[in-house]
Image 1: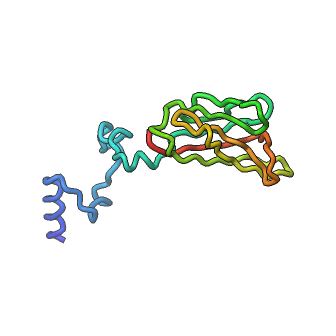
Image 2: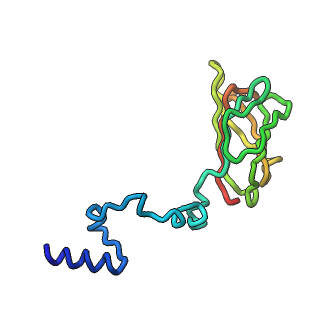
Image 3: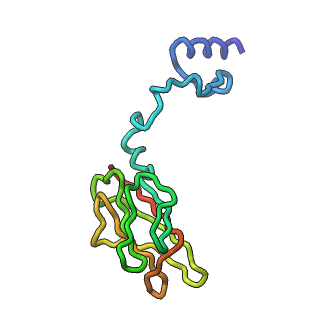
Length: 149
């Protein structure tokens, strides 16, 4: 036990964190400097893994955003089930990933497709399509995007 206490004392004075003592030292958020934590402190590899934009919107009638992050606007392109999402902050290029879901209307089970003719750094056109395949407006469409900005 004495050897453990000496090692613990040495580690504390040297600024070394020994995992065996973390529970004993009771690290709390109050002991972490605010300037040491933040998005700007993360590596680019970690930042690439975050969702950079998402939207939940009503795709029927007057298209309306329910909630979003980093979305400037949603546009009904006029054709049934066809929308444009404009990102608040552009992606670095058009190599980002987009995934989406849509609520079924009781008889149709829709899925989201990306229109590769307008898949740009600043916006993405999507289609809501059923297995028939036919285009449909959905009462709830959710889309998110991950990539470099």
